[in-house]
Image 1 (tube, rainbow, N blue to C red):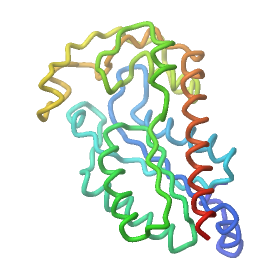
Image 2 (image 1 turned 90 degrees about the vertical axis):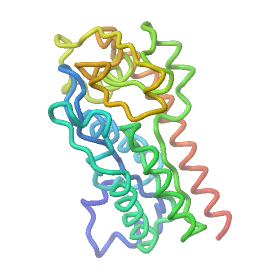
Image 3 (image 1 turned 120 degrees about the vertical axis):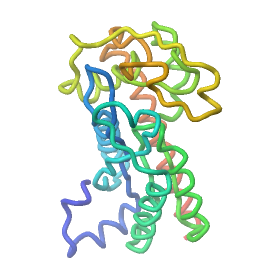
Image 4 (image 1 turned 30 degrees about the vertical axis):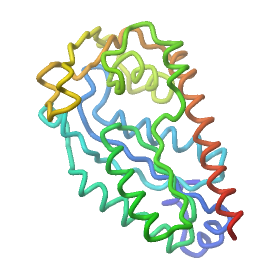
Length: 246
């Protein structure tokens, strides 16, 4: 259900029946020459729609800006601070709770948002202990990702515009992918990048962290379907946990 398409006369009863609000959170940032600036928004939206269809949740309008400090100097990137993002998510969460939602699931398309999402969830939990809060970023896909991956990962914990993320896009938003412009990149990311502020232009000129030419729709489907299944389980579990306290 798309929240912004509802009307004020009918939505109260629908909220009471659903209990679940999903907020897609993305970013506007460089993703190489083959993917659009709004890749993370597209992925978050498409994931949210699929999860909502199987959980009876409402999908809120997408929060389209994220913390993209590492890529802020690339053409097209727009960044906001963690503090701004925390405040925005917290304020939305308060409104959702006051409207009657009891499960707030944030479906994230951009890893850089993770710190702010977690902090906002903690603030909301401190104020509303019965509010079930989830911050979701492709949960439980590590094993299947390693099974489908052909190229070595450029980094142990994050990926970007590479074989994996491009495969996600080929599965969820193929019309926005230009595989004729996909690049094979092998950036050398120093260990120091994990422990000190490091703009990405110091180790990549394209913002592609891996071999995007190896991406396929089939790889994306295998990983994304696992992520969707896990998100559904987590949301249904949160809904059941709230109902058990009523």
